[in-house]
Image (cartoon, rainbow, N blue to C red; front, top):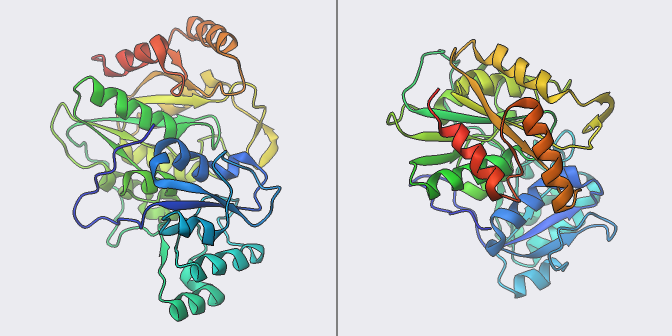
Length: 348
């Protein structure tokens, strides 16, 4: 799949095509940027590069920065999102190698490329660009809570890195295929790299979080849908703050709960059990009613990548019956996904 890339005037346009840098990351959940770009902007990716051969792989050809440049790559994307969003010293040599190969470097980490002396010196010497995507726009304000025109859908999750972005992209694609006027609203580094615009919510000052969500999804025509990429989880001890600010500022009419069956512990905090999906639905409705009394759950999006097709269909059908809501896998699509779209679009 390739998501349309048609940025509006004034938005950041990244040098394409890309090499995806996975560093020395061995946990697939921390390489979600790499997998997201592979799956939704695959035509813009010539391959992947690593600083450790044991690093996780996207399945794209592994190559050196020079080999990628020879194939036409124009930038190397730091395609991981480790806990804390920092760039370790072990990556620096490969990043400098990319600059020497004639590539710009793009990152969405909390650590700014331009603030790393070795990279900044090399970029100046070689005339290359260091592009930090995780930079909020200027002039953000606190939220007003005022009702906005148009319709909104927010993806939420039982945990991090289990399909909120993929689900939002797939739903946007599904809405547009039905002739619905809809926009994907990116809230994280990968979504911004795919869509070409957005606001990196986890880089926004906490007081302005909900206000940033209001700006991201402004007043729109009554029949227009903004499909907003969720972040974190309301039940994650580390990331619940960004999730709540996004929920209040988005004022969603509909939310879709994303979940990975079989995952038991929270990403990065495995001693904490995953919450039950019914508890997450109830909590999201309770908290979401603060800014939209009419909020409702449109259904659930399961990440069933660890299951066979038959196992996945059986599991989703059973959960749909139990919860009385559509349950689908946004990557498998099919009739279950059509039912999820139907329920999201139905009149309350």
